[in-house]
Image (cartoon, rainbow, N blue to C red):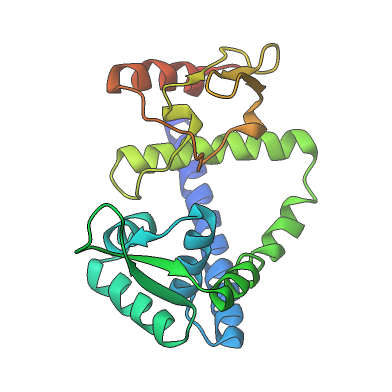
Length: 215
């Protein structure tokens, strides 16, 4: 059998496996959400607001969650009616509204953040080196989906101007110039508060090294 056919089979099986994981995640998300009197989308918005630690405009919520503006607005309105979020005028523009968690919303967000625990338990059965390789592979997939325009951009280390990539992470760590830290693959962040986008040429150079690095 040719290498191309083997590659197609592997791609198909990995894709099918991810779809099975997606089914499990959707089922678990709905099970938790129904027990909390929410929808998975509403839970995702609560967690996003908690992670950001500052109010977000509706447009930012829609972009970060890959929702339409109308869907994000409806979800936020429902959360507001439940007393889990509130809208306030922004300091930058008195005409604009930003959404923030209430005390009840923060408690709900903490509970919402726990529903993927079933995944953590399964991942915990992998050896440490398997987990690190799996995480690195997920970063590569997420970045590829970003470049294809299929998911919103993340504040990732690998696209940050402060990120100094290693050609061989097993022998020498990456480095974050902003925090002056040596970081391994498992330390790479998908949502870093100090991330600043590098220019497109730098991103391409860094990504080429990261994608081809020996692991």
